[in-house]
Length: 352
Ligand code: AFP
Image 1 (tube, rainbow, N blue to C red):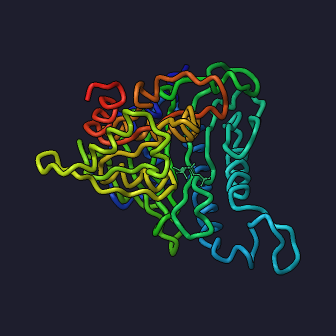
Image 2: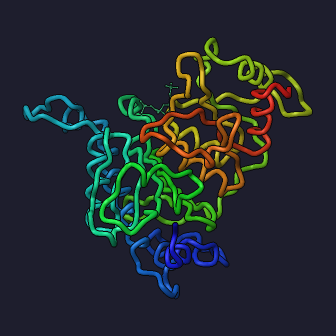
Image 3: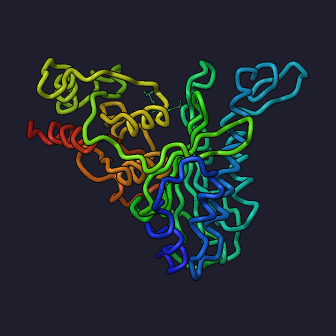
């Protein structure tokens, strides 16, 4: 359960901007969220700052990825004959080091790690982080946008360290969630419970993230659908009928929708968040539970989309209400404008 202090430090009162703050730095934004809050210890603020630092560190590595074969990161041997690490492992280590440094994070569940990584056994380490440190990594070699996804939970009990049971909590218990998109610019998009969704763009010449997208709201409906259509032969009947529906010609309902699919969740979800429409990775005959992971992909995005006025579902139930049973559990994921996700759900349950 969240205590008064972190409830305060994530309340809408604390972080909701009253006037436009476009142009302030990420650090100032995070700090302003804490100032004046009785009982705020600074631990949550410090954790968010460490994530901001990680974003800068991973950006500098991703930006050199085109030189991977020359400089390293490929899992092979570089021209100096040294064994080099893959970029997703580098991102994972960078994040773990940053989160471990200040002692507020008890444990991390990462896509890169089979097991939990305990970072502190001090009972005062009150936070847990879930992360996909480098999502879309198969796109690195072709220079397409990739990203880091994260969510922050408060440890339910004041005990030393953490175990898997501490992570088996539904997504609606997240205190914060966000992602870092390494695209044409690097952007960090974050929401702390009740504070709205805000996007910060990185200026590499200054080395700072600046608030560029204040209070992001997803459009009520969109005109783009995003799905790996190569899987259509394996889809259920409902998903196939929905897919035919989005492609039908009907001016009154804005159809056909345009199709956009990058194959990096961070990129596809970001476009969907800003432009509206729908992203779906449904279950199919091969992937009975879908492909994406509940803890560190679906939950953070569901938290962000709902905070921006959108909807996140498996097609039949709300993502944020699912109680996980495994660390690397998969789940069908449908994200987007409320109108578009509702239509998808209607097809899945046979109401259309
Ligand atoms: P990689 O990290 O292996 O590139 O996978 C990316 C991802 O997990 C997610 O970012 C995409 O939305 C999804 O997989 C794409 O999957 P398909 O290639 O099956 O469409």
